[in-house]
Amino acid sequence: MALSTGFWAFKTLAAAHELDLFSSLAGGAGTTVAELAEALGLHQRPAEMLLTGCAALGLLEKTGGRYRNTPLSEAYLVKGKPYYFGGFVQMLDKRLYPGWGRLTEALRTNRPTTWDPAAQSSIFDGEDPMMLALFWEAMHSVSTMTARKLGEAVDLSHFRRLLDIGGGSGAYDIELCKQYGMLRATVFDLPHVAAIAAGKIAEAGLTGRIETAGGSFFEQLPKDHDAHLLSMILHDWDEAKNRALLRRSFEALPSGGAVVISELLVNDEKTGPAPAALMSLNMLIETEGRNYTPAEYSAWLEETGFRHIETVWFDAPAANGAVIGRKP
View (tube, rainbow, N blue to C red):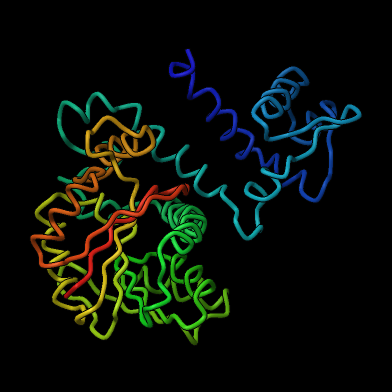
């Protein structure tokens, strides 16, 4: 029953967010059913149902007849907060939810359902600008929280220059540079993405320590970095492209350098865990890739020439571990 009705909880969250419920209750403001109904132009019956549902899910709490944000909602669902997660919720609702509705089609055709590879050059080609903006805000939010856990689990204190390959909005670099005072970083991504990262880096006040570079990681990688990060990148691509990218990383790293692959890892038995296995199905509707196992990554690293390969496990929103290889 819980599996069958799982989407009920998500759509309750998504609808409440779309109605701007949590931002309207920011800072301790409360609401009654009647006040919410008037503010949102709703009938009292659905207004009460929405508030009850959000309270049941731990998103609101009720005292003295008034509903207020819980600390969870206040921290992650109020617009403008440092770790605002609403962009991710909205992206799931508007982009991925419809794509998952066609999962059987994806299974039968082995093709994405959120875009058309026959008519589009990439997942972003022809995409609505508002949806693209949502995507990058979503990725920044989920990456920020994951980067913090990665930095706690993997010791980067011996490295001086980090190359974040496919680094997106620069969330990992911002968090890791905050944790490691001597670390400098470069976000390497397509030119239009690097521009997004530059803005986020400036907002964080780290322009002096984090650079951006535009280019395709399938063509070249910048030199002069002793650590490479591949976070939530390799699950997008098939095995051949991943092996080629790891070879390029090996060639660009100096002796003693390391590559860190941070992902939601499927276990070696391919029986779970559920977040990684379901993310792998998400890759079916979105990309040509899947979520791989530590054994698969380790074999590719070993074949490429990396040594002292290890897997470090941790608990974060977008990753559960990192596979690390070092260049002799």
